[in-house]
Length: 137
Length: 182
Image (cartoon, rainbow over all chains, first blue to last red; front, side, top):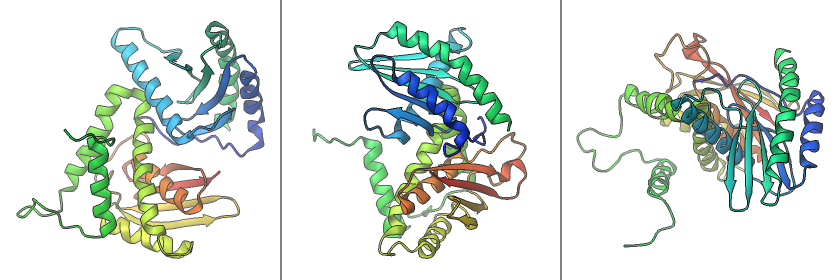
């Protein structure tokens, strides 16, 4: 089981850059929430335009991503880059960042999945770079 | 068949929590064996059923499930301890310590309380989950971290992040859980 000692303090001003990235993701059409979830399922950063039980969604995102990644391993697909959950009223997309952290986006049904997916893939390298420097300090 | 909106696990959970709240630890249908079990059986449930088996299915999602489970217990324990104490932190901690001792979870000792910095550190000596376990590579008491987080969250009514920073199974002789009030 992985360590839970990686801690990104959401109160610190150094995380302004992460907040700015999440704000940009919220500007994509149909995106209603953008969150960073740590390896314990704790939501360290979130921007959203509706009420969310952050404890529950954080744990669920980690559990769903973990289960999907395990399923991928069972069929020889190796690393999981993204998990897309298609629901009646929208999508939940989860992408790994670093050290067990996950970026999760919630969208409404009318969101353009291709556009959201593209932006997510563009964002991950930037977040990875930020996390590498934060977690090293 | 009676329609019930609660799942069977939720029904069992309610009965278990009711038993804890009542402070009555005797249990029916255990006339010969009594209410206590060997710690290794608990550890098998915790580290196998809610540990390696869950990890086999959920991979990196396992610790968050375990943490979330512990937090649910912590929230329930917090509600028990918070009753009729008029928000007095010392009384609350005293009741939590007693409850953890009665349930043999561990000996809870506040190590550092810095409310201005929003940081609390609680030691769990003789931790039920990792006692007698050695040579792990990282803290393994995610359940206890979640539990402590739930307990603190209930008292302060604020979001918290609990992190196990020392673990007996790492050779630290105790488990230390840091709670950040957010």
